[in-house]
Structures are given as C-alpha cells and as structure tokens.
Amino acid sequence: MENKIKLNIKDLAEEDRPREKMLLKGVGSLSDAEILGILIASGNKDETAVELAQRILYSVSNNLNTLGKLTVKDLIKNFKGIGEAKAITIIAALELGRRRKLSEVEVLPKITSSENVYQILHPVLADLKYEEVWVLLLNRANKVIKKIQVSKGGITGTVTDSRMIMKEAIDSLASAIILCHNHPSGNPNPSGEDNNITKKLKEAGQILDIKLLDHVIICDHSYYSYADKGYL
Image (cartoon, rainbow, N blue to C red):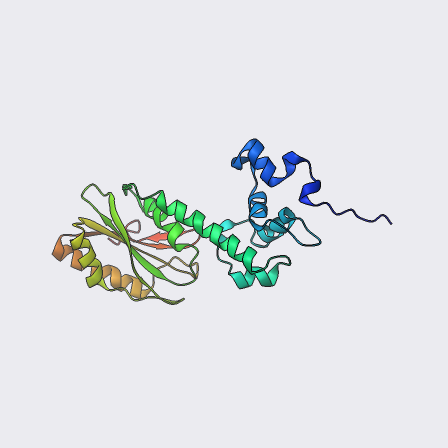
C-alpha cells in the first residue's frame, strides 16, 4: 500500500494558497474556508489550515451565524489544532464583522417596513443566547435617530421599563419608536409578557404623542411583527 503524502499549504501552487490567492485575485476570490484558514494560520498534523477550516464550517452547516455562536471552549474542545489563541482569533474576527455590519446602518436609515427593522437589528440580536431589548427612535420622516439597548436578561426573558423607553424618546425628540427584542429559542411568536409591554408602550405613546410603530421579535431566520399582524 502506498503511503499517502500529506500536503501542506506551502506545497500548493502559489495561486491556490489563500494568502497568495488574495494578493493575486482579491479577497472576494476566497471561500469562507480560505478566509478562516488565513485567520487560524496553521492546521494540525493531519490537516492544513484550510482543511481544518473546512471541517469547522462543515460542523455548523457552513453557516457563519451559527459559527458566531460557538464559544472559545466549544472550538478548543471540538477541533484538534484549535487552541485558545486561534479560538479567540476566530471569535474576534466574527465580532468585527458583526460590528462592521452595524456601522453600515448609522446613516439614518428610513423605516418603511418590518423588514427594515429586521435588517438593522438582526446583526445585533441573532447570535445571542439571552434576550436583549432594543428600541429604534425615529423622527417625523421615520428615519432612525438612534438605536439603544434598553435591557438584557436571561435565556427566557428580560425586563423592559416603559418609562425609561419613553424618557429616551423624549430626550431625543423622537416622533415614533419601534421596540425590538430577540427570542433565543428560535420561536418568533410573542409571549404574554411581549403582548403586555406592547400594550403599555402603545398607551404611553398615545399620551405623549410618540407613536409605537411596531414591535419586532427577531430570531435567526425569521421574525414577528405586531404591525404586520395588525395589532398596532
């Protein structure tokens, strides 16, 4: 039986090595595995960095959002060749990508549908394993003045203070607000508490002339909109 020759990245043609390929063809030419391979720099005795990256991505069905939910301990435990430094590098890179996505929506986006709300806050909320509540403050043209985190809690819920939300809206001279939070369970349907806070904010807004335009519940691949369902 022939011995299998193990190739390292340096044994590949220059245009097939991820770093060199990026320089020759641009970063857009790289696959997710090649980019991840650059981040982790080296593999193990059985795999190149890219092969190890391919295995990591395969374990999360090639879904970068799912990869973003893994912890340092998850990566170290499940993948030979991934130590603390490499695990931290992977998580830090994914967080940087998430923050870049957030910075793209700072140019006063106009809200015309619940889909707009989902696009703005999905990068903030989708990867979390606990609930967070956020509010979008809007001007009269329905453009976002500010987005603020109201609270964060446990796996099954959080506490939302309607008075604090209205104070933020008044201080920012907002004409309308949109409430948004995530359901880590993946079920976008509202709870009784979700209904209660929606009702309280709607009533408070009517008194203060600050309209509650929507309450959007975000999950990984879906969302629930009170406005779309006709409840506002």
